[in-house]
Image 1 (tube, helix red, strand yellow):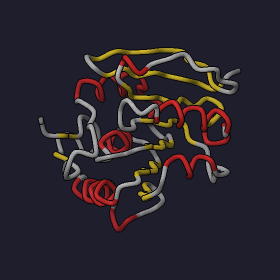
Image 2 (tube, rainbow, N blue to C red):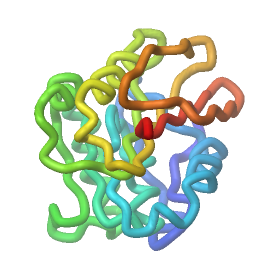
Image 3 (cartoon, rainbow, N blue to C red):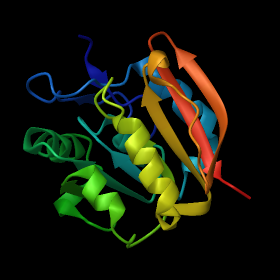
Image 4 (cartoon, rainbow, N blue to C red):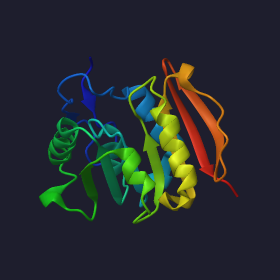
Length: 191
């Protein structure tokens, strides 16, 4: 497996640690770079929720490119320990500063069922594949739309064979991008 790295911004070129074992599937550099090219300069000053965060690579890329705040959620302690370590490696999280980043070890589904304590400009969903977890998370956000800002996006990272049309009430799919065996599905708040 290739090394995970930060592609652009303040921490450009920094190598990130992988989560020990096989509980994560890190995003490829090509897919991550394409994702942030799509988001573009709007990432600056934004808030970002990284669900099933794994190594934290996507949220760390957001911070490196100028996001104001990223919350990382993963149920696995090995993942949250790795995220904390990667934040320190990149110098993006000095003294565990919760004004710019927060790492929470929790069940994503239980967390997003709760009333949101803040809304996010971007929510990134990248769960284990082939378990319909992306669908469950997206449906929960759809029923709890206070998690997403009025101009926000929810982005799911899945295998293309997992995709299916969902009946949503507060979110609308507006784009898909395929990169090899990865599909990024973009939803926005319904006008």
